[in-house]
Amino acid sequence: MAEVMETNGSMQTDPPPPIVGDNTPMAVKQEPVQTSSMTPAEVFRSQSKTPAPPQREQREKKESLKKREATGTGSTTAATTSLGKRKAHATHAYPSPQRYNVPPPRPQDYEAPRPDMMQEHEPNRFLVPKTHRELYKPMDLAENKRGYRYQRAIADQLFAHKQYYRSTSPAPHNARMSFEDADRYMHFTTNALMATNEKGWRMARANTCAREGTLYYEIKVHRGVPETGPDLQANGPQPFVRFGFARREAPLDSPVGFDGYSYGITDIRCEPMHRSRPSKLYQAKKPPKSKAKTLQQTAPVYVTLPPEDQNVKEGDVIGLEIQLPSLALHQKIVTGVYNPAVDIDDGFTQANAPPVPVPDEAPLDVIRDRIPVAYKGNTYFEILDHVATRPMEVYADRTTNLSTLSTSTSAAAMGKDAIKAAPNPNHEQPALRTLPHSAIRIYKNGQLLGTAFENLLAFLPPASQPSKAQGARDGAFDDGLTGYFPAVSCFFGGIVEMNFGDLENFWAPPEHIEQRYEAVRKARAHGGDGEARWMPGRQGRGVGERYREQVAEDAVFDLVDEVDFFMQDGGVGGVVGSGGFGDGNGGN
Image 1 (cartoon, rainbow, N blue to C red):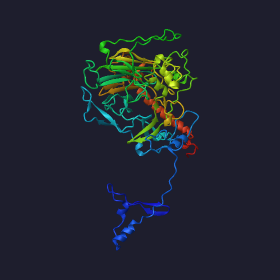
Image 2: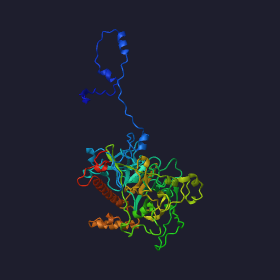
Image 3: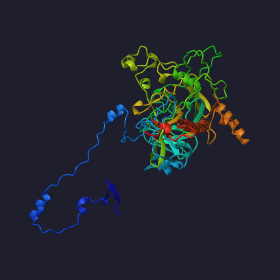
Image 4: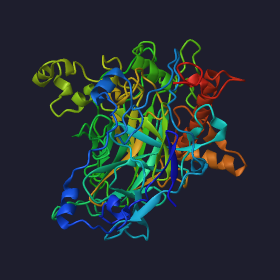
């Protein structure tokens, strides 16, 4: 039945929709067939009269996109992303998340997140050698790319003031590789602990990041350099893998260690890789005997690997351990108040205890600007991701030689973008400030090979920043997921497996990691959680423990945001959403 609608007080009937595939004009099909007594010439003359065109509706004059962006008004609908294209309602004098104009949740938004869809590789399946396990390609997911990051969301009636949405995650609920934070050509097992890729270098990051303390994880090579060593007579590309730690700015279509945002280890020659420049493992520097003395800048003592350890081969277990100072010390460095004469230690007053807050220091704010969007049956938080900055691009440039910056002709040619000094804790550029007491150590089959990197680059804002061109607001805000993520890269069929220590015991942990987990296992045998529930300071632990902390922190941040918006809306007796609008009454 045709629909009836009312327009300007008169009733009109909508014409029936055209049949798909029928090219006959609708007006011709609706006219009844009538007989006529006119001659063919008269019919021709009557049909040749062109009817007057109908009066066209006056078009609304719209400003150009360039003018709208310059004035900060209006929104764009052609873009596939939402954040930055919609304006927040109210600004505040204190740090607070922004609230956006979003529609109310749909009934399906309250449902649990859908399981990830996986597709077999065609025409040949990806099978793990010597096993029956298969690797699949994740489908219908929002991928982190082009300066945007996506995190699963769910609607919850308990969070009415923060527009009903909070964080969630589909199974499996453990430390694993992130399907959204991986290149589109990466394939995974269903537990997201094995990864491969059939093309050139591609990367995937884990769902857990290291922010402070010491974290450890392991990888096992299933397809890569053969056990007998590299095949020098092979024709065509061979499978390889790389592994290490990467920040959110590191590109996913490149290997770990490609630029300044990641630190990687190669399987060939077991070389550290940073800024696409290989180096060598070396012995860790010994700490000073007295706090009054600082470490002297001495040349590192490089490690000469025996022939059997010069390559990471199939079946080898490699342990990677990252050590970071406390966030309090980290904050001093990125804000420019770090004093090496005063800030001597790593910020952990006790080796096996969390850092103690300092009353005179401002707490580290976690501000999350997120907007819920629907994509292929799932709900995500869309977040403006961190992007590469100009100082970091110059730092990673092949022509930049850190040892000859003062006399480098390439530095002079770059002008204002030139780097005047090598990265250090007091560098003039926040992105090039380094973290004292930070390092990445490499273990092979439980034995320490050496230290790969020291003095890692800082990552807390303003060292990491989203793109203002895409709509990021002024200010340096930490969203709680800024740090170094375990990362792996695969090349032409290389297969690598990760072990974060929460689903099973580590395969070949070093002694200090094994001692901690032995204490945890004994405590759990007596009905407790042992030490696994507390942040143990600089004591080494698995990435899987950090995952549980990260989930708890995410839940706390959601509650803090809800309380923040609750107070903005007037507290008890206030109106939901009133504090998020400019006029305070719920209007735009």
